Image 1 (cartoon, rainbow, N blue to C red):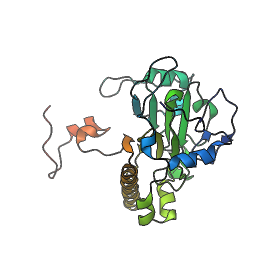
Image 2: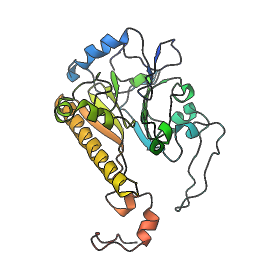
Image 3: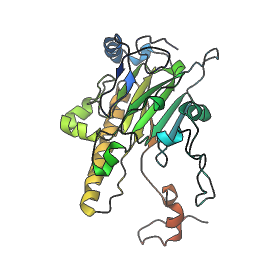
Image 4: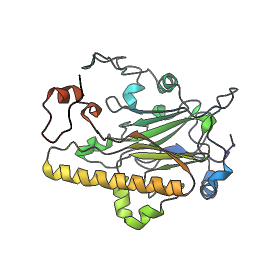
Length: 296
């Protein structure tokens, strides 16, 4: 595993300057890191080793990555020391964990090298939800301040990486318009205006980290749950634009020689069983155009 001394991010052990643009990527970077990041962005992927992780004195091993949409709780509740531990059983009789007591306990329970959360639902960055010993964190929060987004406490993604598998590059957003550190976005620039790209990245839906030659995209794709026909059409168009931008960015990253891992919540339900309302939907008769129901 190569050592990237100029790409050290959030850590409780080092006194670093915090850079906190409103609603955006929340990281702490050493003063000398900016130029080095841009130099590494232009480096060929072959110059880096295969992704692996070190845990102290343990030997390196392939990356273990976990993805979890925590929208029913949000990061603040999951890391709370006061929230109830478990909720009431759902339609399947399963009681879900509501709180782990702290961020450190939450990450330890997941036993992974990289943890990708979707729907963290944070309006502003909170220190105790970003800084934990042994981990670096990378956030993208919702910039839109309107009733639909609960004043900004909406969507949002966060990627936590053990310091032993720290990425050599990290950026907020799928389009690259908010942070161009990683690059490889020519197709997006050619197809959309800067204003359109900023709109796509206004809700905190993607963080990209690059580990050796692996580009990992932590994504929370838009849903369309609006009941108003006009608003539903607007959200449908927004989702289509986001997914198109996501496709183009993945293609550009792959064309640059990077391996691409797209992970997260795509908000796509190919069948009834993929819906959060599966019990209700399976009891209802299928529409005439629907495919045959699955056997009991």
